[in-house]
Image (cartoon, rainbow, N blue to C red):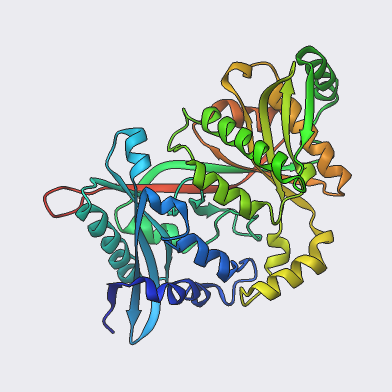
Length: 381
């Protein structure tokens, strides 16, 4: 049967979103996204990413049935930051058919090439500041909040279309019972005293203070990660957009700013793993999502440490280790005894070493960003 891959108009975005269910309806580990959230993410008028980014959605169909999907993406801020001409692909799904996958990836390649790009990377949905990377090991459980999930055969399909590794992203599992040695616990008190540390929780109910803290987090984030591979600063509008979303599910005691001698030094953002609730919301509807969150939230046993950042001038002081200790104790007070630290760049040797040797973390999942050169003479290589 012949395959057709076509660029779709925004009027078909909902069909693009719902087609994801075709690929996971029998997968017990998949946590369906909220359809409303996906609509916000892909709304080019409301999501501020598209103030500096562009996207084109594609569907692969066979006899009227969706057998794959992909998006071609341009992030102009990325190219300005890294002085390159990289396009991206994202939201990739496909049946286990190399012909389908290659046709989809070729469509994204041709689209980014038409925009002047000379390479393509992915998957990113739609940027490195969102869900990104292809899961290549650790398929035996439900993904945690804001992490990707896919069938094992996706790596074979993408590599079969000529893609190679650009960078791996690691996820570490931490257990409260052994993530901190006695020595580390003693060092925590020393680090706190030496640096005159205070840990201040977010106050979500005070609008003025919340907005002020969001500005603080934005400044720290954009400074703390600016040297990292693939990093692109959040714009003010993007950070506010994200903060408004995360506020709906965050626990204010798991989000805190750390100050040293009265100066802001870093911050930690950890979120309860609400995917443990949302995996039961098979339809992706908002009412079902709210119901499962309300009835199952107390059973959540893991937090994801999404961001733990220290400003450059405070690095090497041990403050980052103190923050891990602090978040572990705060989670324990909530009855949560496991944490996932993710994602960590494979090139971040200091963080990887600290998580394994100091925190007894288990590297239990790997996500991969792929890349491929796109020639400027009309073909691909």
